[in-house]
Length: 259
Image: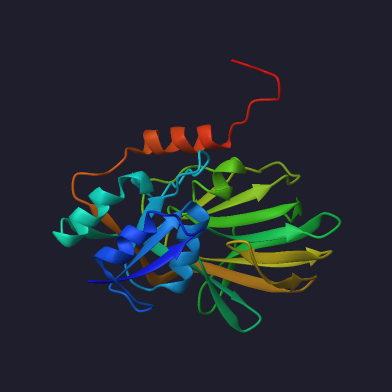
């Protein structure tokens, strides 16, 4: 088996992987060692299945991983014995903007620039536009995510954790109006967003797609690009365990305070 390694930093345990397998840029699988940011980076750079392994830092939450690098011997043993399955966990999000396409794992983000951004949202198909919301939204912006990224920025912004595949969710960021709750859409819908006033910034997984101004629009949909992960046989964390680890990893005690 050939492996590709993408890591947050060069952990000493990676040497064990390099001894056990042939390392290649075009591996049969990718091993992403670190946190969720490392996994997202791997998903952008590698088209095949990814095995996510948490780093050894105390705040390495790793929602996509079921195992820590401290258990690297177990990882090597199960990979050698082919005791794993490849599982599709959803599709990447496609962003169409100014004639270009971008692919996100976690979310597409519209954010204001200096002042509130005014925008409208609608369904988009090949021929028509249909309004989703009857009023113009005004605020910090919005993000669009799927099941895969619903526990990332979306969760921090008050959006729902999505446990059903192939759904899109629009979550609004500090917007004014009579309706500010997130909206869940079916996978056959494309979400269109048009800027009605002032400027904003458009990003996918934290990467700038460009500035966006009055009259500009973009389209978001689920792509056909599947995101595949490797599940080691007999090792799978429940979602409650994952969320507890994420929350604990983000909590910090004030200096001088003991619980």
